[in-house]
Length: 391
Image (cartoon, rainbow, N blue to C red):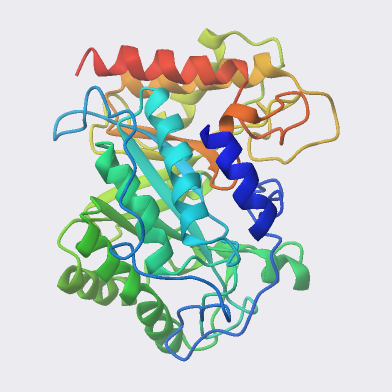
């Protein structure tokens, strides 16, 4: 029986998560929230199966990375976003994880970043928490097992979801939160991170990104304490992801091992711009930060919808127009060229949805931000196969 057939059978009995909304500037899950547990980690759904990875079925066999990452090689990665569906059984999670990992390996990648949501109630709240769509460490561990068995370098990245924020004020997002009491907010965030840091250490994760696009909190002295605490539980690399708009001019130094950026530079170029023109635009944007090679810098997110007008607003959601695969393909090719020529530490393409089978997507009807089944998919393979050959 094929993997697809098994998935169909299992899905019929357990249900699937809803198709996620578009990202602007980041994914917002549609699943309803539930009350957090006392420790800030989401409670398990009543009656749902949540055994630890060790008690679940053993990781399946699949294709392995041909050229595994090691120090000195770029991180050639894909972002996987996991908005959990608690009704998914352990067996279904394992199957979904396996098909996602197989797809990432097929793209010639050597790395995967698993991003997942956590929440705050308002922009002024002093606490964060998990919710129904926040995967528990036990469930996340299944995907991490599959990735590790295929030889992928793994990054774990909790990301503050914006749904509650924009519901109250459409101008608010994770980069504008303003906790009334920052001591309380950072203490709450520390409690939330604790079991995920322990998971990362237990499963051999290479990097934990301890903050993503939190513009309004950057430079706060609490980060030093949080980073020091993270290192007491996790012996790997810590990271931070700046948003593209502040990255090129900020003087803030985050107390982490690796700085990255979610890269969506807005370029005043028409849809018929060439790859050369787009690469020049990417370079002009990054030159505002530093010129020449930047071997310590990661692009944690590179992506854009397959639609007209994306060069001016690459983080925009579906604008209602038709699919335009060419503009997305050129954007990806230009970003890869810039990153390779400037010897960056690597890049991660945004994004693959954990609940979507990339082999069955309809490129004409799928989310515009997806690259699965579209021309940009081959551009990713070409980028990674060429880049790995020179490092």
